[in-house]
Image (cartoon, rainbow, N blue to C red; front, side, top):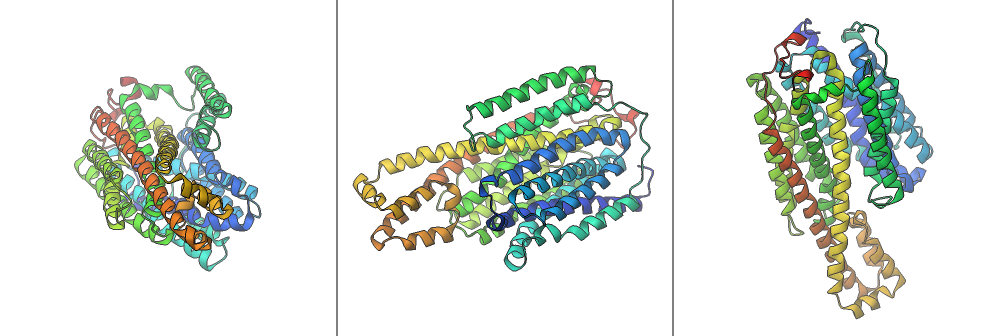
Length: 538
C-alpha cells in the first residue's frame, strides 16, 4: 500500500484512528459506570469477570488474527472487528443480568482484539518504518485521549441519563468508522493458499488463557499456592511445551518460532512486557493513593489523574515525530524508561501528607516517560522482521505487553495486600488493647472496623463519613484514629508497590542498552531487511 498517494494514506489513517478511538472510548467509559450498572442488575460477586473476559478474548483474538491478516489482508479483519465490537456494545446496553453483561463483554473483546491487531499492523502496510514513528505516536495519543474523556463522560451519563447509553452513545462512531474503512481501505490479494495452523492456534489459546487467569485470580479469588492456581500454571506450561513441538513441525505456524531468533524481536518483547507491568501498575494503583491515602473524592481524583494521561499523549505525539525526523528510536526508549522509572521512584516517596499537587507532578513525570517509550517497541519489531511476518509480529508485541500488565498488576496487588496487612498488625499492636476491645464490643463498631480492612472501602470518603456519623459520639474519635492508621498502612503498602515498579522499569532501562539499533527502512520491500535484522540473522 506504499504506492498510494499521501492524501489517501492520511484519510485511511483517520479511518483507522476513528476505529481505535471508538474501541478505546468504549473501554474507558465503562469503568466509572460499572458500579452504578452493578447496583441495578446485581451480581457484585462476578464483577471482576466483566474485565477478565474482555482481556481473555481480546488477547487471544489479537495474536490469532495477526497471523490470519498476514495471509488474507487487514481489511476483512478490521471490518469484522468493528462489526463484532459494535454488536457487542449494542448488546451490552440490553443486559438484564450480570451474566448477559459478561457474555456481551466477551463479544466486545473478540472485536477489540481484531481492531487493535490490524490497526497497528495497517500502519506498517501504509508507511515504511522511517515514516511510522509519527503515526505510531498519534495512535498512542488516541488511546490517551480516550483515557482522558472516557471516564468523565461515563460518570456524566450515569448521573444524568440511563446507564444503557454508556454502551450506545458511541455506536454512530462505530458505523462511521466501518463505512470509512470499507470505502477507503484498499483490499489486498491473499497470499498463496496456505494451511491454517488450527492445532497451533488451539495450543496457543490453551497457553494464554490459563496463564492470564492464574495471574488474575492469584492472591484474589485463590491463594497463590492453592490447587486451582497451581493447576492453571501447570496447564499453561504443558500447553506451551506442546505448542512449541507443534510449531516446529507446522507448515504455516500461527506464531513462527524463527522470529525469536532475532535478538531485536525477542528483546523488544521482553522490554514491552516490563513496560506493560510498569504502566498498568501506575494506572491501577494511583487511584488507591489519591482517594485512599490523600482522601480525595472520586470526582476530583479523575482530574488529578488527567495530567498523567495528557503528558503521555503529548510525549507520544512529539516522540513519534522525532523518530520520523531523525530516524533514531533507541534514545526515545532509553530516556522514556529512565523518566518513567524516576517518576515511579517519586511515587514511592509519597506519604499521607502528600498533596494532590505533588501527586500530579509525579504522575506527569510517569506520563512523559510512558509516552516516549510506549510506541517504540512496536516500531523496532516491525522494522526487524520481513513484511510477510508484519501482522503476527505486531500482534506478538501487544500480547507480551498485555501479559506484562496482567502479571504486573497481580504481583503488585499481592505486595500491596501483604505489606498493608503486616503494617496494620504492627500498628494495632501499639494501640491500647482495652480501648480497642471496648470499642469493638459494639457490633456496629466491629462491623465498621471490619469494613476498613478492605482498601476499596477506604477510597469511599462519603461512605466513611456516613459510617462514622452513625457511631456513638464517644466512639467517633476512635474510628477517626483507626481510619488514620489504615490510611498510613495503605500508604506504606502502595509506596512499596511503586518502588517495585521502579525496579522493574529500571531493569527495562538497562536492557534497552542491549537493543540493536538498525536503520529504519525507507521501504517495506523484504529485500531491504538486512541479514542482521531478519529472523534468520540472529
